[in-house]
Length: 250
Image (cartoon, rainbow, N blue to C red; front, side, top):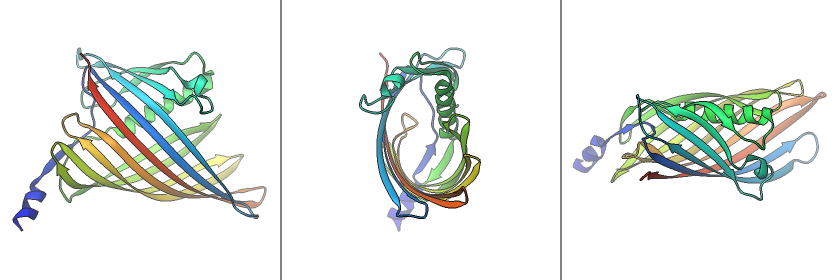
């Protein structure tokens, strides 16, 4: 009983924030499995992708810090030559989400630049949580509405309701599980597509750096729409692993 009380007394101030003169090297790998059914045998396919983002935060001055996000893809991936070297530039205040103001991408067309700018801004805004005091065993909920550009003139509207639970604290690391409930809708060639899904995942949170250093999840989605009167069903399973290495500038 005393051991249980001691565990429950452990409290984590869970928030995400950038620190001055710090670099965040984030490696993301994603495996997407898709099965499409439209009257015949289901068609299945898999796609692997990976990306590295290097976020460099400068010195604090007047309660702001310059921030630059550089994107790099594996050279074997489609579009890597055009994407690599892209930089999104902005500023960030302590305990706030970054605000991005410009993009440098000489190899990308203007429309692709706008999509990337929107994607980075959405991710930065939704990924920063206000401070939560959480004890071991407690949960809290975050709602994440997102507009995801998926092509010229097309946007996916998605809402992800995430329930976080603090499982344990070891040293200066906090370990969370997460559960996702997802709804989405979009228009494909004039037809409305709706979908829903669920997912699970784990987060390892670095309490000293106020940033997650590991964020893994598996999401399962079901979507459906009609094309020329024929129903089309899509099932996807997306496994994402994100690891972050944090280093202070000299």
